[in-house]
Length: 552
Ligand code: 4AZ
Image (cartoon, rainbow, N blue to C red; front, side, top):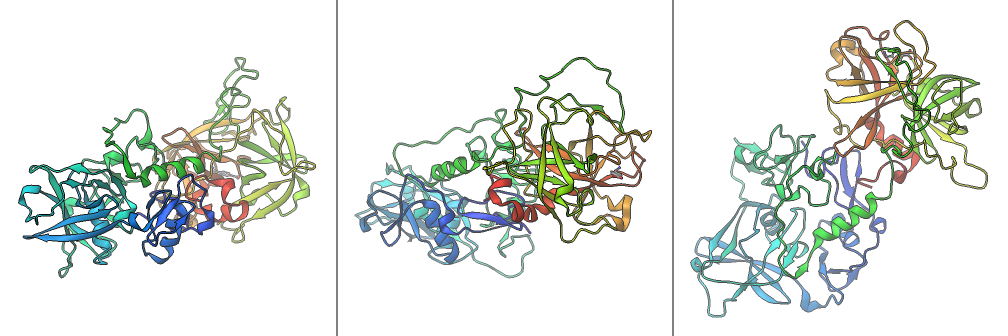
């Protein structure tokens, strides 16, 4: 079962990082510094909201309160429920006094936060509703203003949510009421991961009825919410809000309608914009998956005969596939690879032996036996073969090639306009069966001729590959091609990349050419090492920052 902490489906908040598919609490010092100081419940302050949240993440106790330069005790935010007839009116105490929470913007996410804290019911709220102000039994000192709050749903106290300035109450104003969850007997409806029981109709509507988001994680369709390709429903106000929520970024595309922005005057506290700031600063730190368009095809783009060779492939233009490398072994090329950036190249384990001195890596190579002006040939410092690689079964057919650094430098390559890194996928759910992706290499064609010029072909990801290869298809493998056998990788393409592009146009090395029964045979698709399956292994060897800008 998936929850909001399943980072194969969704992004972790900035105070957590993704380890083996789960968002775990970050070490507080790993948080970036921010301009705003975070005030804590005891009146002290931390250098950022991320740091304060990383600390409370470990204890599950609220630590963070709000933002302020002073952090005085009088600024404490407290919440209690006030009984009025059958209703629990939500009351919030801030430096501006004690007031009810306004009904506008009141939702399940905020109600879950309220119920989770004072009552310590981890499953949160049963319902989040409103009543007219006129329906409340009021004492004479009843306030004339209410406060609006907005939570993301993962906060530990309402003080951590966005709190807006007070607004005047009239008799017709709606105020927030809450009913906290009350477990009763066996669940015959939708059972959340946290044990909460909700009506079936509440799943897949973009509203976190479970309190752990488990009712929104496996949805083929969404009701009144945005559907991410990984089958997660996100609320419409998260679409085009400047923060990527879907793994492929489809929620932030220009073609989506922009929601009407609710921006009341003077924010009292606004964690959402802090989260946006932290994410955009960390996510701008890694460049990958985007070719240098200025340079693409510029060289030598003369018309040539397009021979349909390899298995259904087409010749590439020079500098077209900027992450493709050739692995030169004792002077000859039998394998490809993918440039990950820095000093790292990814290839198949069956392409290399642990003898770095035997190899050179050729970048920006087009014709196998002729250099371009941008072609660079770099010696190898180290070869890391997966410790569970099995040369008989081709299990774990993955290896990292570490390049030799340049003299007196920590870089391994001179700046090259025709070389770009491809991104490493961090989640096995980023791409799905039937997605179209691209393979490339100098491998053999149907007639068994090795290509003199780099070729590429589109293939589709094929599900249930056990149907074709039975027990030879193992975890960490992925099939692609077409079942008619028209396009395929072949001998000599090994180690080269299978690259898929996400909704935002960024390319990922989804697979490594590994094996297959012959080439281009019907019902014998090509088998690839599923790179996302090895994300933790790659990250362990290359370091985190080298391979992903997300969930670090
Ligand atoms: C090989 O021998 C090989 N059709 C690579 C890929 C495929 C088959 C064989 C996939 O290196």
